[in-house]
Image (cartoon, rainbow, N blue to C red; front, side):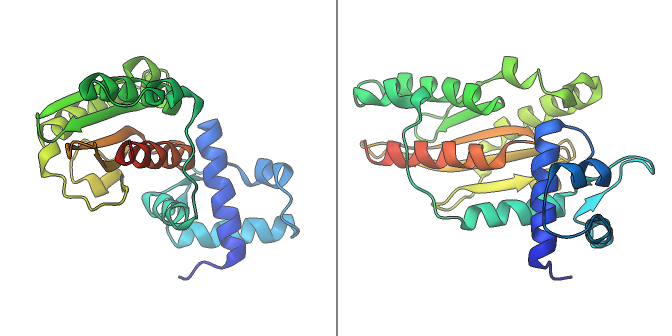
Length: 235
């Protein structure tokens, strides 16, 4: 099924609504919140088509709808096509103002502040020194998903596997995103990874990224990592 522009509008808003609320999106609340210029019946019909095509699903018969991995992938691919401008976010301004005197300290600070801005677990890995940093347990533990102990345990196991296999990640020069089962780990079905390669002026290379529930703020997180990696390349 090829998604129409109308279906894309509905899918985008449904995903953004779910990311914001952490609750399945019902057609009734959806119709009240957004004005698309077409009837509620049309919205319900298009949501039904998106469900049949595998972009969204109903966790329970009486529940609203949530995105599938396929829905998130469609949404993320469109975000990656958008033109972006590099901007230094206020949280990173102090870190970058004085240049690079201590690359390790700078990278640790960036990882910590990236965790705060993303409310997820941020990581960095220096490929030359084989050092892995992670920050953000306090932020990510507040996510509604982790009220379920089993899910928190799965996340911990996934993070351990991820850290162990970090050198096996083969990414190009651009940012990449792995959603749910794309991570190839039985512990990863509910999580997403945003990862990018960085370069320091002394030619040191590494990886910088965010790990969290699939229901993460992709647009903001993509912008944060893209901006940081671009800044690091030009220090």
